[in-house]
Length: 364
Image (tube, rainbow, N blue to C red; front, top):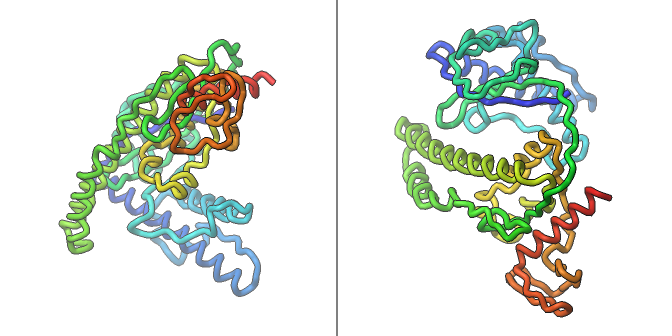
């Protein structure tokens, strides 16, 4: 069984918007309340506390007004946060959710057909039928599992609908291959010498963002004008994010339809942005999102997405004779192989080596 989510924009009326606001608040409240009780109980007894949203409804009757499964979702999120912390992951200990800065969202599960998709509407528990722009068709054999309702800082509402389906995907025969080397300015350079020509949306809007953010910083915090200006900044950030995502979707689709095997390096983008002072450029490219989109598009077609170890010397190795140039620095963009005399473009040579290594791994 596989899972797939479809995200649609929804248009709640005034009454439904109020219910969404109440649900967001109650989900945040129950998460913080259970986390606080767990911490206090552990400090007193050195033992874990098992608590459930239903235990708090007598003391806080307003919790009964919202979808109970949304509160259960908050409980599951807290359990996952504890589990990730004790597994030794780098996420840290669970933190309390802020009223102003936390994402406004909640997840509810489909039980006994309490969630339905109608013509241009979605029926949600305690909310009713909400107008929805269903721009993508859902296959009939898909089974609805859950819905995540979210509100963006710009004031838009979305419903991310998760489906479960069974589909057998046969692996394809590898005929066409390509390697992608990360490029700070172009997003990537492939083994055929092509570049993505990424438009760098964030850089193009950076001056406008600076002006709008400077205006926001000079306003009285939490005033009406401050909220208006904050929404304008959020709308501009959202536009940049949508432009970037649209470009990455189209680029990953083009590659997934053209090649049977794609090789990429498993780079640590966070470490790269911090150590080399390339934070804005790395964030603007969104290489991690591009890899995620490319991977699922390939796997849906039975094709291969191969990651190469980040320590693989793709740039330092001659793709023609295999000579390793250990003294190659980051500032050198072209170099001549001392053994065979071939002139290498750094990124193109790396992409060729990534492709060859990916083919070797896939066919081993």
